[in-house]
Image (cartoon, rainbow, N blue to C red; front, side, top):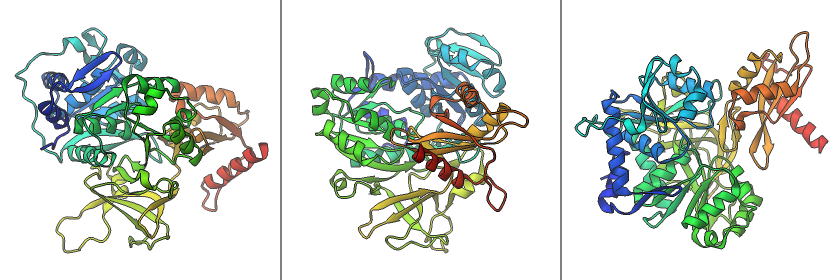
Length: 525
């Protein structure tokens, strides 16, 4: 019985050790080989001193060592922290210090780009470079991947399915990214649920395009390994590369976010890909109907699965392909082994058609936010409708998203309660952008907003005022943002205002600014 994350690979290896498990370029691993590499790396991590439940961060592009490290951390009884390879040094430093990372697995080039970040992470004890040399660097010992300790007798830490397995960092509505803590149970239950409605089998070849630091990206591995399918790793460069890779390796399943699908929908896909791709999934935002139509025409044999989820509960709903033509604007129904509720301000169920907050209960509900009890108490609250006589209260995720449910039980997204910006499939904190912009001294005040964009979902816009006694230079502001942020967080435009409007409480009136910017853009067109 598969209970722990590492069991996914071990069970598949026991069933079919010679079956293809993982491909990266020309390198291909069978399940038996992958299981052996994971076990060896797990014992090496223990030999480096990793303790039960301590954190191992992996800051790498997709490659064989990335996957081995993530699952080896889990097998060792530690907790893996996948770090988006697009993040810059300030964000990486925040993650490493916030969850007290003990071991960092990275590459030499990425380590060089971090500068003195490792020296400012007092809990960091070892840095493993997949392409570097062993030695000593600052406060942490440095070990080359090929020099990892080979101690087959090293004893792995015992864990159970309700223990921590991973911390995935996602932007919050305020401040720097927050860590969502996931248990083994969360990850395994998610793999089972998604693989069941996608009808995955050992014959599938699933293309891994999305970052493994994104819950939907990690899911490409867990769902593949759960059924003994093959995961094909790809570091996305150009849209044409996706179509070429799909044709070359006979890809059967592809997951993406709306901006990526917008690019892929216009391609002339090779005939081999048109024959092999049997499904595609969308998450991270609503797929525009025009994009969906073009994509279905480009891949006529592929069934579309439109999904909604949040990192705090992985996936919540999916729209079966049989319903896409009738309800293309629907989020679908609850995924297997989850219940989705729509409740009003008092926590009572809303009748069909009445908007309310989406609440997710079940095995996929995360353990909370790392080292943040206040935010955890806000988002993870008792599930509605529980019998007060129950001795233990079940917690659910209160999403903050407003949805409605029709008479047939299908859900429809209405709006987001907070000010998060959803761009290129990422959730971006406006406060994080604003704090960096304000720190430059180039502005007086700053507000980051998301405006509707067909390709990106939302584009980041910045409204600023000039610094006292000076002028605001939009290009200089953007240049500073490029130094501090990954590309998807850099504002597309900077609008200089004489003053930022405020509401009666004295707070900056974000909705009014967004409305004014939207009106200005429409008038410009």
